[in-house]
Structure formats: C-alpha cells, structure tokens
Image 1 (spheres, one colour):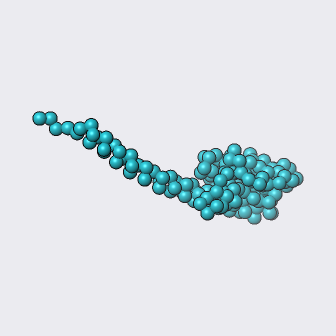
Image 2 (cartoon, helix red, strand yellow; image 1 turned 60 degrees about the vertical axis):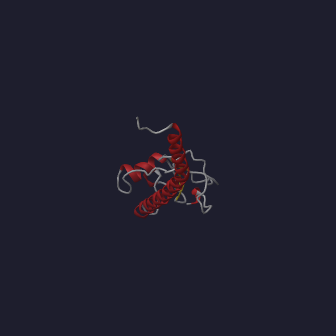
Length: 149
C-alpha cells in the first residue's frame, strides 16, 4: 500500500498557506514603508547638517555655487563636488528611499520652491534658502507629506 497525500489534502494545505500569506504580507509591507520613512528622515538630517556645516565654513555661503559666488547660478554638479567629491562633508549622496534616486533638482535663487513633489528626482534643493526636501509625493500614516519632512 502506497502512502501519499491525496489531492484534497494538498489543496487544503495550499489554501491554508494562501490564507496565512494574505494575513502576513500586508504587515510586512507596512514595516517596509516605515523603514523607508525612517531612512528618508535620517538622510534629510544628514544632508541638512552637511549643508549647514559647509555654509558655516564658507562665510554663510551654502553649497551649490561655483567658487562660493552667490551671483552665479546654482548647480547640482557643483553641489556634488563641494559636498561629496571632496569628501569633506558626505562620503556619498544618499538615495531617496522611495524612488532610489540620488539626483538633485536645483531651485534657482529667484525661483519659487515647488508646492509639491513630483518624484522625478531624489531631492529638491534651493541653495538661496538652504532648503532641501525629499522629492516624493504622498504622505505617511500621520498625513504628513513626504515633501514636508
């Protein structure tokens, strides 16, 4: 006599596993979002600290201006060179944890900061105001927009 599982027994096991997966997966997704939010706030803290430190060491001029001349248009390449390539403030540009981009949108001196994020860059930065924000639409579970972190 062969000992094996019947088709009905296998279907019951698969159904039970499916039910368990349906219960567990949403809980892991919530933790994933919470982890991304934590990384985003920590990355913003690091970026803001590096910007403030650079400005403090360069007579109040924030990074992004060629030769620390605020009359020149700000540039993302200059920002990266000043903070990262010279490795004095950051070892690397942090990624936006939601879209995995480390690119930076530079907002000019006379331009208004966007009202909301579009998600096309990792970060949005205006050197004139030393404002850097996470470029990601949406909000956390407390209804705080990621762009307002």
